[in-house]
Structure formats: structure tokens, C-alpha cells
Image 1: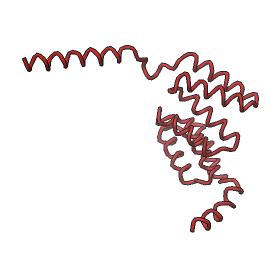
Image 2 (image 1 turned 180 degrees about the vertical axis):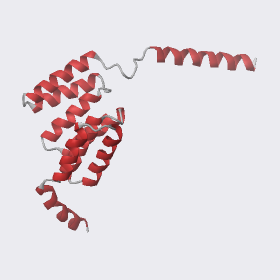
Image 3 (image 1 turned 45 degrees about the vertical axis):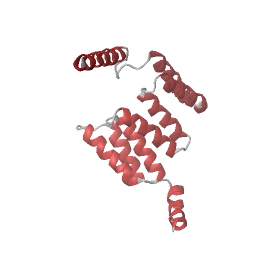
Image 4 (image 1 turned 180 degrees about the horizontal axis):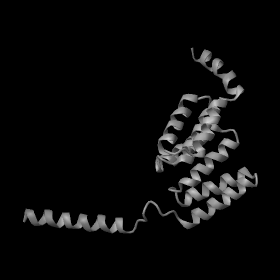
Length: 166
């Protein structure tokens, strides 16, 4: 009697798990509505309407939170607005979905440079160079940004922040 109870419980568990997994989409299939919203958001960004672009891209993520390109585009919009910390967060979300996303690594590296975190930007550059064995434009662009350095306003505010922390 004990064995049959365990066997029935195991069978029910197997049926329940296999049924729930059968209805899920593979990770590489992004919802078509989310992709069309992504295209509309990029068009709004290209037209210079950053508010509409951000709203449309956020809607694309609400439709399908696995849309990595929408996270990267939102990071680009945030960086254009001068919100480097928010941009870093969006790029991090994209990198959680795909750690080898070169566009997200480049964007995050540029946002790090904007914040004055040059060492973290160099780490991103090293990752990009490891992924792109033959070199790629993302590595060249980020290397140029790192060589240029952080904006003067960031560099001027760093000693004040360190003195306030002490």
C-alpha cells in the first residue's frame, strides 16, 4: 500500500510538471508584439523623441521581459538623457539575459566612463575583446571612450564626494 501511494504521487508530479513545461516558449523566441514595439521605440529615439521612445521600449519589456534589445535601447536612451546610473542598470538587465551581448557590454562600458568608473569600463573592454577575437567596432569605440576619459564635471565632483565621505 505504501509503494502504490508513492508511485501515484510521483506520477501526478510528473504529469503536472510536464504539462506546465509544454506550454512555455523557448528562450530565443521573443513575442512579435514586443519586437514591433522595439522597432517603434528605436524610431522614436532616432527622431529625438526620447520620452516616447522610453515609454514604447518599457511597453515592449512589459509584453516580453526577455527582450534583451529593448533593455539595450533603454540604456541608450538613458545615457542620451545623461542618466548613466540608470543606463548601467538597463545594460546589466540585458547582460543577465545574455552575458556575451557585445552591444550591452559596450553601452555599459561607456556609461561607466560617464560615471568616472574607468576601471570597470576597462573590464567590459576586456570582455568584449575576449568575445570578439578578430576585433570589432564595439571594442574600438569603447577603447576610444576610455582613452578620452571621464567628463570634466564627473572628475571635478569626485574629490568632493570622497572628502564628504570621510
